[in-house]
Amino acid sequence: TWLAENTRQQTAAPLPADLFTAVNTTMHSRLTLCAFLPALLQALQPARAPPARPVSTRARATVMANSLTTISANNLKMTDNIKAYVEEKIGGVVEKYAGVSQRCDTHLSVMRNPAVADSDVAEVVVFCKGEVVRAEERSPSMYSSIDLVADKVARKLRKVKERREGKRNKPQLKMSLGEMLEDPVEMEPEVFDATSLIRRKTHAMPAQSLSDAMICMDGLDHDFYMFTNEETGKINVMYKRKEGGLGLIEPEN
Image 1 (cartoon, helix red, strand yellow):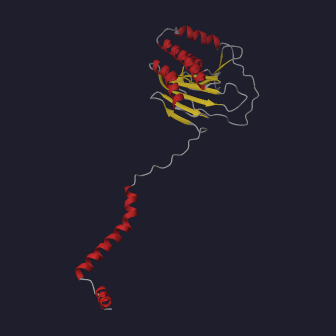
Image 2: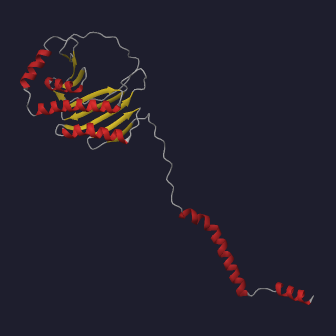
Image 3: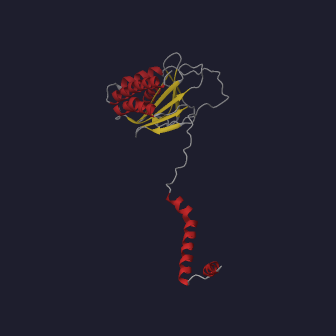
């Protein structure tokens, strides 16, 4: 009984002031550390990068192959292999004729129509000083289309280079053009579906002579060419006639 009473009195006795202060300070420090510990751990973790957005293969993709070549695509996933192949084939041609070419636009597209066998289309437009060279090829394989269009662009750029080096006689070219435009132009009406606008293009029209316009038309692979006549300052349209030769459309006023 005496031992129990003595123990109860010692337990109920107040703690010394120094010891109470030390215990209170320690408990306060631990509580403060526990409160800030989650924020401290979160700050020490490395920042997470935001999740990447999926890239749609149906959207139009555009990449810069080099300072002279731009590649764009429709309905086609632009892989590193395709990009490298365009740089090798088409970019190599443009680099070879860098003396006459300024920049090049390459457009790749896939026609999603099972009835079309040659569904992979490669189109190249090379901008030269004073003229434009265009080529287009289609095949069942995109790599084959790139090969074919690269060969065609090379042939056309070689002609541009040879002409600028003076290997063609300009007076003979004018005489040939005059013979082609000697007959009067007769337009034949054609029936076509004009229910929707399929494609829109912009076209620079610097002032040109008739002979220069014919040269540009030959490089574009189009049936017509619109330009500004340097003699009249008006917009003219040169086109290929079904009977052969060229026709010229110019405004009356």
